[in-house]
Image (cartoon, each protein chain N blue to C red):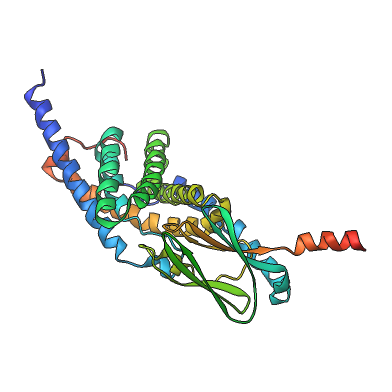
Length: 184
Length: 135
């Protein structure tokens, strides 16, 4: 038997996840319209959807965030691309999620949201390169890793700052009051 | 907002990443200075599909174009001035066109939807060995 309070918490969680996935998909769509690859490295992305994933990790737990990552990847792949592109982004998104979740658990308060976002961005790039390497059956593609790492630091900092502002603003909302973490 | 935006841990993390990345990038430019365009004769453009060798073309100063045609679609590459670039393709993401003009061994152009990889290979090391045997 679930109490009324638990039920209301579950409902809030569901609503938050739905809103976050919707925003993450929109951010992915916006991002696909910005041709970052043409003046940097192909495959380099701003990782705007990571804003929502990191914010979700901040307020909710790992299981909910896993669900968000799956939803966001599946939905944006359905709108934007093909099945093979879905596999690439899933590979990157999963690695990024695992690294960010792990760092949040083990780093205590030594890393801020910016550091975690940087690590997540780089993990995302490594995951995508690994998926690409498997597909074309060659590790040569890792030639681009150092440049992607630097790009990951830059975009990770931007995303981290955005998350900082977003979590701060959302934390003042009544709906998120129940989820306010003591960490960070 | 509580706390400083950047913690010590962040600075260390970002520092390590940047140093690691630069450690890989900087030597590439140094080695490239030694072997400018005079080593072009030892370099070839290798095209692979699905990880298997498909075609090898000489790396030339003169312009030459080659079109890779598979059941997935086409990729048109142009070799000139000791480098290679992808100039046209009918893949959905067209990311391969963003790789630009590639001149260094190890660099490559990848078209994931078509599983096509184009890269420059340096055979100078192997040919030195052959010379040793002959001499």
